[in-house]
Amino acid sequence: MKKAIKQGQPKCCDLCRRNGPIRPEQAEDMLRLAGGEPLVPFPGVKERWLSRCLNPGCRKEIEPTFDSIKHAGTGACVYCGGYGIKADDDALVYLMVHQRLDAAKIGIAKVGSQRIELHQSMGWTLVTTVSMRGTRARFVEGQVLKLWSSLALPYGVRAEDMPYAGYTETVGLAARSLHQVEQDLRQALVGSPDSDR
Image (spheres, rainbow, N blue to C red):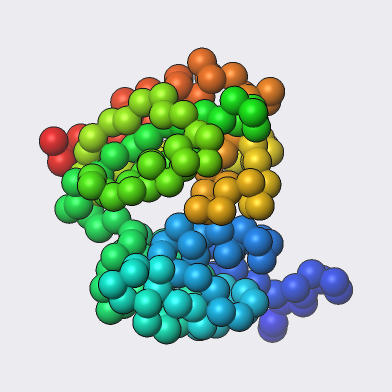
């Protein structure tokens, strides 16, 4: 006998459960972080999303899914892989603050990329960087973001405050002090696999 689904309770697939609720502006921010510029509104987690590669040497139209850009970690573009951090890439975990916006940001970048400089051009100040392989960098960043989410901390800035994307990786310093944020990073480093170095 089939179990009855309670009225008003939608049946949810594994993809939806894995990704959780997502607002269109959050999805767009994650797409830009993965190296794609949306050409159409967010279609949902399962649908292919018509976009353009942000790599100046590529600029091809691409169609990643939200699930792939969030979890695969290889960037949005299947042609050039110009964005995204692969497991063996030399990478950095960085921590930045913005005094006027009163916010902190955790992030990751490939060694040699302009990611940090782009944020600095918008008033962000670098607090620290830690070098490691890509797979460990993704783990460390993920642990910090998971902690902030578990504490129900609001984002520190709005999407429009960060033209180079990344607002989903921020926290307000009124809600979490810089000292606490630095401790969050240290704790994530201690708990991360270190076989890459």
